[in-house]
Image 1 (cartoon, rainbow over the protein chains, first blue to last red):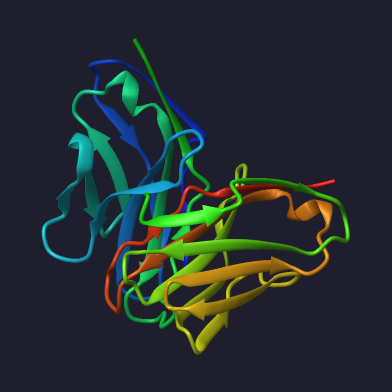
Image 2 (image 1 turned 60 degrees about the vertical axis):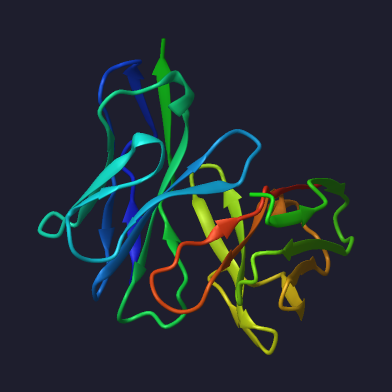
Length: 116
Length: 113
């Protein structure tokens, strides 16, 4: 069965410092991996995705994520955090081979708080 | 995302009432999804539809039904609302097969008293 784990309910970081939001996954086949961000009273916004190829994926707003197959991880990173990055972040996975429904499995979310 | 709209945005209803949540999209996508979000649980899939004649249950479909009235419209109904259906509901769309991301509406906050 597919699953996603976001081990941290909240991540606190000072503005200007690098940030990492962790995600690990489990699928039977090859993963398609996604990161979404949710601002208060808004829907989820797509940040980036990994399909294949380069393990470092760059996305919107200066975010990037590193795919690590051996550790089954897809951590979200940003070199220099902004206060405006404060939001709820979701990792999601789809099994590229075994799942014909094309549905995403979401993690429980990590709240990022960037302090000035 | 203004391309995916949901109505109403907020709704308070009583136990046992029937309620419909509506979703419309102008993205021209074939695939549409309904999720519910609960604190600490992330998003869980209720129903999904690949086209007007192809509707499928997700992981938590009990107590819900859907209707795909057109390519652009996908409605979620609670036939007899109960308090544990209090949640934030999201509609999403995506295009075709492959590793395409989903685009989400702004959500409907539903409270069942």
